[in-house]
Figure 1 (cartoon, rainbow, N blue to C red):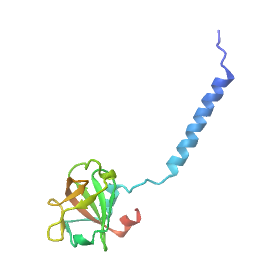
Figure 2 (cartoon, rainbow, N blue to C red):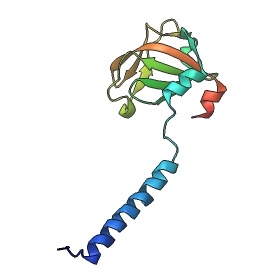
Figure 3 (cartoon, helix red, strand yellow):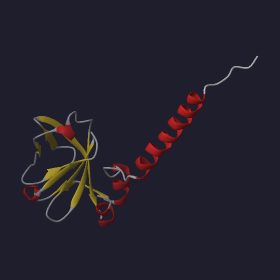
Figure 4 (cartoon, rainbow, N blue to C red):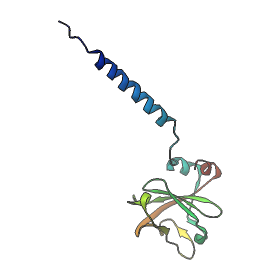
Length: 132
């Protein structure tokens, strides 16, 4: 004995499937909101320090462990030793410096008072900057 299927059930299932496709299409077309830190590391080269720390003009958190730092002349990708909790929502972001120089393995990024040690610094090339 076969069961009769209500026309409303089959239409609602088709409508849900079509709606899911319509919702997924715009999301797939949107560019990512932040650049991929791995690709930025590949486009740049490692440096031991950032001279002239007083020329830092912008910070852009990419995720909990990576921050793009801009000076008047260059952009740098900072890789932190660990995830810096609350970095994306921090109201006050800063960086420690020694003799006006930011050193990998010595200085730290600060986010609302939490010190997050800097493991690596990569100067990002123009190709990497275009991704921003």
